[in-house]
Length: 60
Image (cartoon, rainbow, N blue to C red; front, side):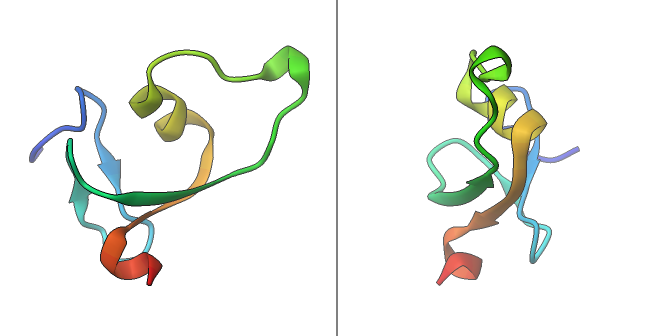
């Protein structure tokens, strides 16, 4: 499965690189309503709620 980003695997939406702890990333998230505001560990929130996640190389 590759390296995990705090136990949740995040993958770059463009190149498919597995993102790991310490990697710089850019995430696109649609702001939810106050009732559905995501709360919790960043890796879980990003994996569940982000529209796209890019590694530093693909975000430039």
